[in-house]
Image (cartoon, rainbow, N blue to C red; front, side, top):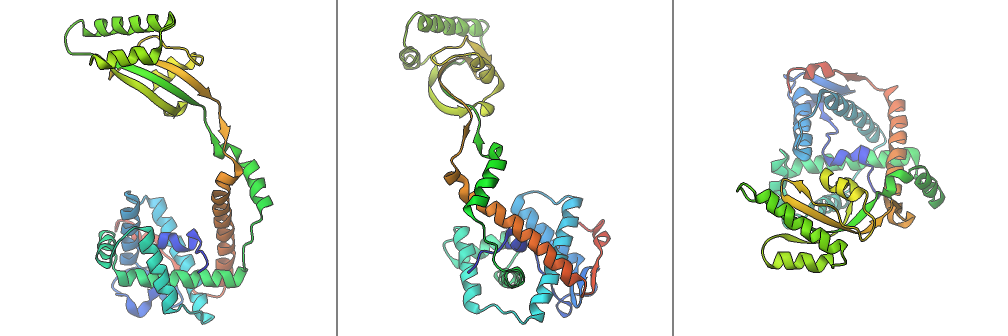
Length: 318
């Protein structure tokens, strides 16, 4: 089955509407596309599902965006029905299996439980996936394939190099002397750290000296591996800033105690190879092109449909 654009799927959780006869008309109608409607209850349901997925309550701006996307998708669904597009049971079952696999659910019970946690049933999911496939099929019919050449991806790679650059990294070794609650503990540990630094700067092996302190139980430490400079705590970053490879810092304090770090290697910013990011570039390009085509198709069908949107009905009902 051809990949479904993210915009169209909306992570398979954005509703694509339903027939007017299937809704309780006591609710305010937020979106109408011909005979298809979404009520205030429908919008709240979809907002709750999105919040359950992201872990964050929707902002007013996100509510407005959700309503607009729902209206656009309902237009597409109406057009798909006009063209008598269909989805087979095999296609639908295959799509549901894919969703299960992507969510690592081992059996039906686990899958149903996962959906319940999001306020959804299997039947509701099947209906939405069915509609999503229809919308995707319509988009493909209206705009055809969206071929993306390697040359186009390489041009994008050149334009967006900063996004694919790994920042400066450093390979560090360290030691930490924990500071006890007694008066004078901090000064004692600082003195121990200074003796270690002096020994290293006189030709001692940092790793060996650290291990000796660790073995006595006085400190912890070892190889920190390679870390991004931007990921380091401010006090560590400052201590490392002026070091050259092989250099050892002066002792410095943190909430964990007294530290000393040794810079093993400094790795300058590095651009990821094109091959490592080609698929990510393709996904991004495909999504942008799909969104542009989606917008064009929706604009055309809106000219022929009765489309009403009333986001103001959601005020105070969230």
